[in-house]
Length: 251
Length: 176
Image (cartoon, each protein chain N blue to C red):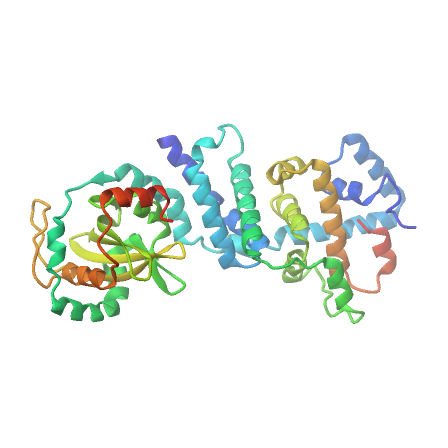
């Protein structure tokens, strides 16, 4: 006889009994039936086996190491927020010294980006689906910090130089990265909610002890600026325009 | 501030379980990690809205489940859910899809994966996570009665897929 029409051992009640979800009275009723009906007892045992198998079916996921970017998302966002600070804005005129040689040199920059990512950039960038992007943990700060200001973390400091719209209508940001004693210039553009690294190159000019930057012809950020100039549609956004873009969450 | 850092550490400790829940919802680890990422980002942004004294894990599981529903609606991540009864029909009589669940967790997982999403969520929370029906109901924002009936239906469906054929008498009695 099927038990499905029996209210005492209905599917829902037996299932709840197995999960310890019945009241003492209800559980006692079922126990009484189990004592009297070996078939029902056997069926419940099989269900208990299934329950154990279900409970263990995803155990392998628990054994896998958690991706670092998930941990960083939880732990490092706050560090960025508290360490955010305004630093001196590099004179924009310096960016206008792009040399033809620098533009030519930019062709080679992509080749060294991978190496720079690991050697220079630390946690500010990561690879996602084969694409170098601004690390998820830093995306929020990357999008909320205005040009002239910087964000910092264990990995170093990123200072934003300018924001502009590219010829293919992407929003792009040029920035400087200082990590350990190394200084790089970089360019990232927003594509499908990811800040994709367009170019990154070491800056070879010596850094003044005061923290000010010494312009030097042919240095990498000349090259990055040259790339910016190549892909830029019109002028860079003013701080007011940039603030409006930030307020719209980069849409 | 220290309190805030402690909460973040608790969230980090939850990541393996969130990834497990994510795999069950999305069907693969990559999408699961994207979902976890989205959920923890939302949780961090809304940390102030978590009420001290309530369960942090329930709060984040709820955020994650809601995030998945949003994604599911927007992108149809998993496509159209396969009704498990259809799977049974397609399996035919040769028992090719039937497996010994005692020894084959992958078959169990595959069967869970084919459950309708509403049943899969309760199975994961109540039977894998070990949550009470009440906690499961709170996370999913449904009634306890709904949880109870969904679990019973899910068990019946899983059993029909996983049980060996030719055991009709036991199956009949065990239709729970």
